[in-house]
Image 1 (cartoon, rainbow, N blue to C red):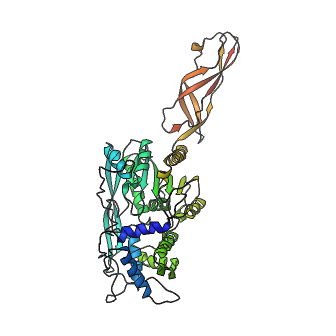
Image 2 (image 1 turned 45 degrees about the vertical axis):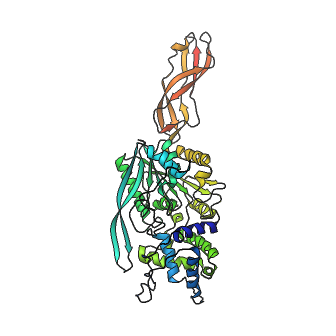
Image 3 (image 1 turned 180 degrees about the vertical axis):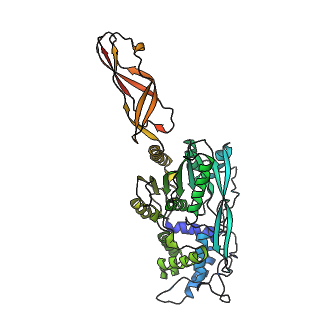
Length: 473
């Protein structure tokens, strides 16, 4: 979908469904005092059509005098702030009770929810308590506990994949990759970020607060499972921002990060999306993207306690060496490819990149699920498991005339793993292409491994080779 189309859908969802009021808007009338020279409290009119909303914004813009340091009218800046950060926009508020209908299209997110997730007998809801701090419209600081929710699939694995959804996205939008990870045998936790999908809170912060929430979820999982539980973090769009920013304080149990279609900096992303607004409302073009970012940042600093420039996932990518996989749709117009290129180039440690041709924003898994799955499988395989690279097998000498069933070949051999460690592995069978117990000579046997340790893999299908030397007494 082209950027203009995405913005139309975005605005359509926000303003152009059945009429509703933005009665809680943080906008104020001229009769009320200003806070930090920003008008932040005023009731807004209902928007019953796209034309009405555009007319109001254009009227506000036309009433703004031309100047060298021109800014958005406060009412417009406040709308953008609320749409970006505040959950309580009635038509966009993702409530706890996701409604899944019986006539869902086969293969849709709802269909997978009803026909796969709801049929599992190893799921549960989990909760943690976090803290939310913000300034209300009267300038008072609100500091309160909020309950956060996740949906958990317990496969009894020593590895848990934590999945983070995107901006204003229903939790089951990631049901397909959740099924993939579950089918691979991992535990899966689908996190509802604060203020969305059944989690408490008024605002979401694109990773500023959620990065701490994520580490709390990890600690909760490690406490419930095992101290050495391996954690894989995956996020899509805003969820990718959360996952990447969590590296500011990396949890020691995290074994890998998977970043799918995230932005590099929120500043660049706001400017990119604002450019789409200007295509719909040309009068906005006289206000630069950087000016808009500064106006929004004034509000985030005053209300939420952070600046826009503090939301920069790319800055967290040079902190630790944990392996990272970057995924992006080749046709993503909402977050451009330049974002993933910037993050990939900045990232240190082992890293891989997958660009899915023809995929739009957050749609890489749906466009090419096989490629996505194979890439993730290969990426995690070498990280979560020790790989057999060779064998420590010694020559076996026997007297000529020894029957094959009496060779007493070893039932266990030493394998050398990719981290340099050694492990004893059973051999269930030794086979020889040709063995003549009447002749002196050297004979080659190959063995079949019986690997019982789930942390060891033989991805190259290597077979131990044993030389049997038959000689005269």
